[in-house]
Image (cartoon, rainbow, N blue to C red):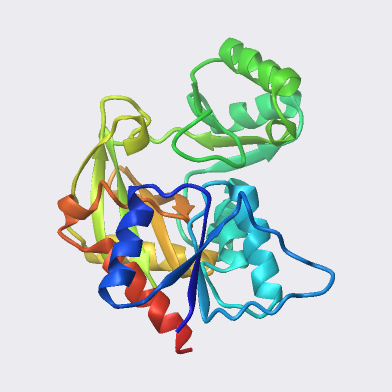
Length: 280
């Protein structure tokens, strides 16, 4: 069995995964994208049974997965899953197509139309970049004056990603959200991410605690995972007056802060799934 791992930084998450592979006497060939070279006009023959993607750069992950998949190499996750999850517009479209509940969202391409979209939803709203993670570059907008200012800054100073305005209704969640971990067709655990701030990501200081898995949480998580192509994903859920909404789906999920609260050996579950993929 030959397994590769794409990465550019070995964080605690990757160390834990490598330790689990080592426990199973499986040597992993590391593929550092900082030094990788792919011949895409004359495919090289990479002899991998599967490659596990752990790259922190969305663009590098996307191209690496596409190249490997075109070479006929299995990956966790696939290019299709990464492409959908890495773009909030594509994620929302996939959720809508599969009838998975999510916050009301509009997309516009000029500041003027973005203002119109905001007023269709009603203040407050959340402005997000179409790509990005760790709760960065989000803005809660409570009035038109603030909206105009933020949209002007995005239009003038932002990259081309900021020329697409992703406008989402603000959900008054109870100072927490829920993150579930889906591997294949199983929801292996969930955490609450709690914070007095409206952004509850653990990367922004949110505190993780165990969230009991209910039938509703498991059902919506599995539907969301299926909508984006499945694999190893983390689902962010919002509680909205007794309903659950899918906010985002993450394809290179971080789990180091969730092992203790859930009581689940998440890296072992990931490794077992990767091994299972080699047999398909």
